[in-house]
Length: 162
Ligand code: ADP
Image (cartoon, rainbow, N blue to C red; front, side, top):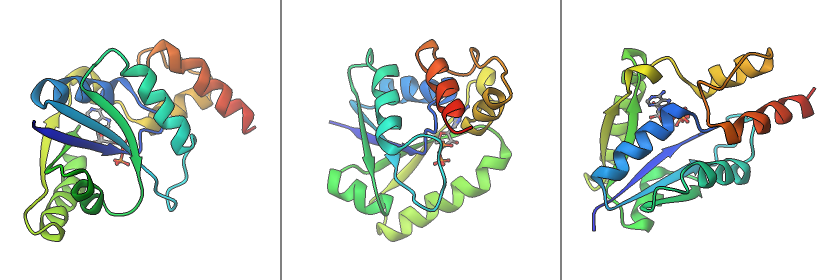
């Protein structure tokens, strides 16, 4: 059984993430999509809320599991006995950060943890969770960015913070 972990903030999950999830799920027997609980990064949704959103929007993909983790990805992957990380690349600007992370993870894991990159589908190249929050904050239409199920949840969350 070949498994991979797709880690990220997913704050909130977008069509860009879902595209990577669907494609990775055809490559691996099991894909664990895991929300990083990073207390240094302020987020709109709590980890539990992000897990719930991910569960809902991936419920039709049978080999996808949703989880969350704290601390180092290499430790989490070792605990799960998984040796591949999936990440998405949108543009050259993602590359330097992703390359550094991938190399650090290889080093820390003594070569046990490798990273596989999937390039974004062109229609989602512009899409990021930050853009979704920015558009929704100003009352813009986010229907091209996130599944219908999420739209009102995002709007309500932003309104609750006003
Ligand atoms: P992080 O804070 O870990 O970068 P994100 O939720 O922003 O978490 O992204 C998780 C992963 O998904 C990253 O590898 C990112 O490059 C990728 N990703 C985000 N949006 C897209 C998109 N529109 N197309 C392809 N990959 C994406």
